[in-house]
Image (cartoon, rainbow, N blue to C red; front, side, top):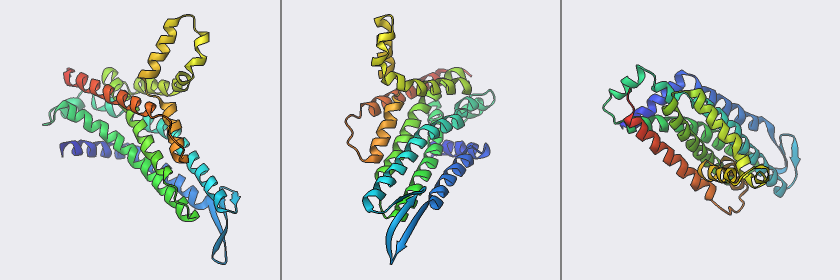
Length: 273
């Protein structure tokens, strides 16, 4: 119950800063686009054609192909743009409660420090999860009801996006505790997102390096840091219903997120305020 109370406080803070409402408003606009952009032509009670964003199809196979393409595009857009917006909007949640006067108030409560930090962390994840699942489920229902095709893989994209955000926000939590700077933690997290595709293609970079040390360094960074590019590819494959050859990028990234949060909890527990 104490943990839930902290999550509720984080939600209320998000409401007060209009962060939650901004997320909710953007998600609603996207869903409304699907309502007005998807049109059905029905002749004698039978669907003769379906138009999605101006692309018209006449048979069920084409409709399903276009539908999966639209859902895949939404998932990729949400994975990239949604993550950037979510990280930006929640970057100040950890540094803000570490400010002088605020952190003392939190620590005066009958809560352990790890409970306070966990509640703050879960509150941020809950805010993002609510909006991501709202957008994905609402748009999935609109597309499914209008086309009559229920493609369940699209729902899995919401799970992957929330997991990826939770991993990256664990890193932001660590950086926020160490530096108390929302801007610094956000820039470092964005840098990881930016360099993730380069680390994935590190084999092509080896030839440009002057020594083996840099190659070992690149390999180390690849295996330690979250593999956001590969997580994005996993999300796309899940939407398409394709076979997943390896889940290594997911479980290794989750290990990173869990480990960095444990380190953050230890530092926060021993930090003097």
